[in-house]
Image (cartoon, rainbow, N blue to C red; front, side, top):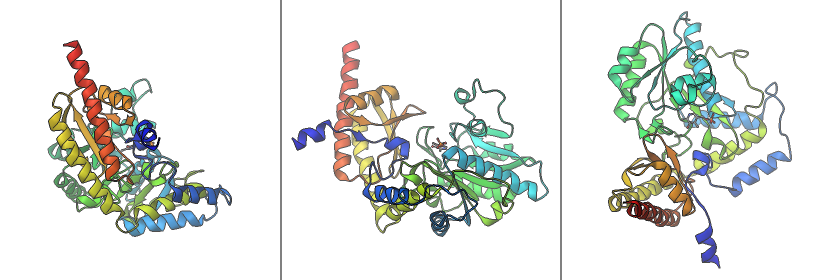
Length: 374
Ligand SMILES: *Cc1c(COP(=O)(O)O)cnc(C)c1O
């Protein structure tokens, strides 16, 4: 019975698109949320919220940042980042510096400013004039960045690994070069780590792999482990102009979200946890490489960092994801004909093995369908 149950159980390698970082119903998160729910839900930010102060201090202690603004989603974290970058230059007597350089294939959210930042026609169409001030260059193209920087440039905004764009890691050398360009030009470097953050790549934030740090960083998704929360992290210098009254939120930083965020950090920052993510990611990628070799008509390559893994497909990615669902496994299609595998960071070798069994079976389904129609 137990075995049959396991075969029928779903294997969630989507995790709400990298949101359920600790899986579903993690006992420590359930406990934190229900304990807080019995106390206080909301007070407004007119009052100090101790859990918010604590989560902010912990993020500051673990990162480049000196200050944190809490909100409710990734797009809101990006909005705060964009406003912070513009206000930085405004306060320094350069109000003309409003433009932000972004990259083809980017995804930064669904608000009016973030669809302009992402620059993808399919998300912009039908929503009126594109918000002004975003200049897009080809993916990881440093020459194009240098050519684009001008007297109105405020910042460069980039995902260290493009998520929706198809798990495309930006080479570390490119990230370091962007840091140099920003320093030389007096502009700000903004990382969108909404998908890559909170342990997903085997570091708390993916920028740590590159050896440089941004001035501003947007976080969300895994930070709440499934509870809506976002955060904009920044250095003191970059955010000095964001004084009380310049920006705000009603729900952001509420006690429920903060209790869960602290509980997520309890687990992710525990000794050995990120090592476990790195080791499991390596194991998964090694086994996927063999899968790719064995099914050249279905898969082309495996890429990514930690447990942010992309399977570049030969067959249409949507078809691969559908075949996976038929095997009761969730993977998430992305750009560049990729299926993303974003399992909970808590998986172990047995879940990796179970995933490979289902991926093999899904590949078999696609090969069989191809034979039947040829
Ligand atoms: C999901 C995502 C966003 C948007 O987050 P929302 O919570 O949906 O607003 C922004 N940037 C990246 C890289 C994302 O993956």
